[in-house]
Length: 64
Image 1: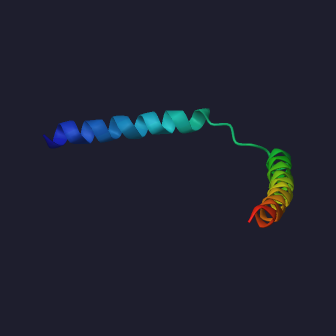
Image 2: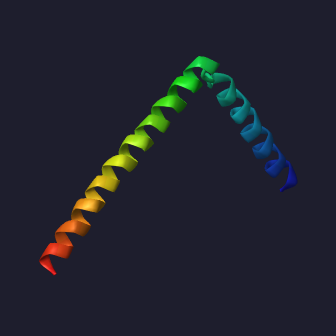
């Protein structure tokens, strides 16, 4: 029973090691570029949602 368990653990770790070798990590410039895009998108979306929220508050206040 323990031999079977140990063999499956060893096989799993071997497969994990093989998959990790296939991973390509981004360069520093790619990481900085992606981070910049995400931050700019978040700023634009927060501005958009703020405008929509303000409009909806104004609209509801006119209705009620």
